[in-house]
Amino acid sequence: MLDTQLIGRLRAIVGDGHFRDDREALVAHSYDGTPMLQSLPDGVIYPGSTEQVSEIMKALAEYRVPVVSRGSGSNLCGGTVPAHGGVVMVMHRMNRILEVDQENLTATVQTGIVTAAFTAHIESLGLFYPPDPSSMKISTIGGNIAECSGGLRGLKYGTTKDYVIGLEAVLASGEIIRTGGKLMKDVAGYDLTKLLVGSEGTLAIITEATLKLIPPPASKKTMLAMFRDLYGAARTVSRIIEARIIPATLEFMDNPTIRVVDDFAKLGLPRDMEAILLIEQDGDPETVERDIERIREICGLELADRIEVAETREQAEKLLTARRSAFTALARLRPTTILEDATVPRSKIADMVLRINEIAHKYNVSIATFGHAGDGNLHPTATTDARDSEEIHRVEQAFEDIFAAAIELGGTITGEHGVGLVKAPFLEWKIGKAGMEVMRGIKLAFDPHNLLNPGKIFANETRKRVVIDRG
Image 1 (cartoon, rainbow, N blue to C red):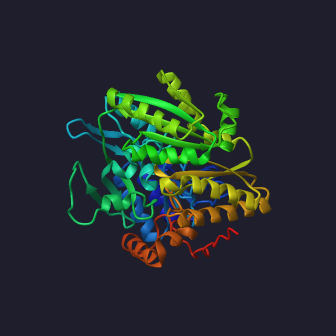
Image 2 (cartoon, rainbow, N blue to C red; image 1 turned 90 degrees about the vertical axis):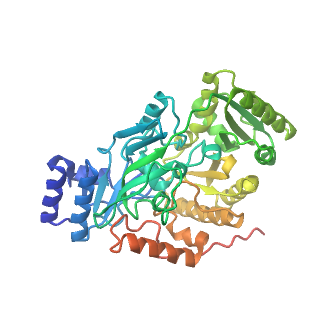
Image 3 (cartoon, rainbow, N blue to C red; image 1 turned 180 degrees about the vertical axis):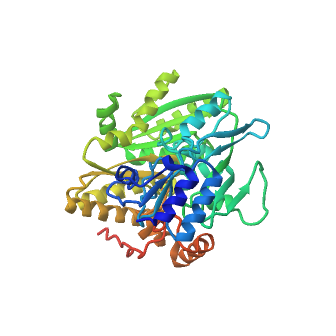
């Protein structure tokens, strides 16, 4: 319960209608896109400006009340679940595009703007903002920054961190800081901009962002390559990169995913294939044609069973639908869908998919795998039922083994979803005890009273490292 005097101060800052502590609001903000995680906050507040965020934080700091900043809550790591109660700060009122600077090719936005709305406006001006997380129709720019979101175009264009060049943020004390700016070069001290990107709301509340824009590609070509041999598909990925071709999109779906997607989207996908690669290239027309032809040759050398190249943009969108609908299709199978991510070197993709299949068989659980083959980021997705505690325990054991396998193959426990609550017990597996201590020191410097999104990234106890016996 919040102190009544604190509630009065908060209402005075934002207005009566923008602070809520009724049951409906508390329940609506007690969970996010992560299944099986829920915790009630004590209040929900909707600031309208950076100055209001600053005043809110000063009040919360005085009363030592924790705060979770939130966009649309679409994350998949429990990153916006208010595990320690306190106040959820929803940023949707701060949703304006403040400036598009066409001389410097930058945009300055408030962080509550929905990603797809921002992208549509930028494209209407003949410019391009490449990050394209699958949640972009509902996720916010601030959420993308907090999680350092990736997307289908990450291989060629990079992720959110590559386009954030300046930030305005409010510290736990209520102080406002500004980092970076409309600059391509800036080495004045530590790079606080990059530090805040991906910090999951644990270091500051980001209120404005200056984003880098680029000219749009002149043309695009999309193809689908289908393989009866999983290793043939994986080798194709490596050979495309070895040929010095960096596609805009290079996506992977395994056989269980192909079947489910075809049932859902009715695209006529070949259900007997072990893997499908979705490949898109963009750029100037001559380069695109040359790259697509070379990619077709590589797919043929690796014995692709079928290769389809879209002749129109409508056909291309149909092919892209196959990949974009994977999670939606899988979510229809069982009451609970757990979408995870793990990243390995791209040369280890086939090994990782086979390990995932072995682990799923070991624990008798259903796991389909799809993901960003070009950058080694896979999404093993378990379809299960939260009401079956015994099955859920087996699913959790399977994912522990999957994280351990990813690290064993030279990878990491998360490529784009973030740590949050879900991955916190495994973070030390990746960065070691010394790395954890450095991160704790950074957290302490920014947030000495642990008010900003407490419980995320730093677990009370590290999970014992899994040692996989492969017989």
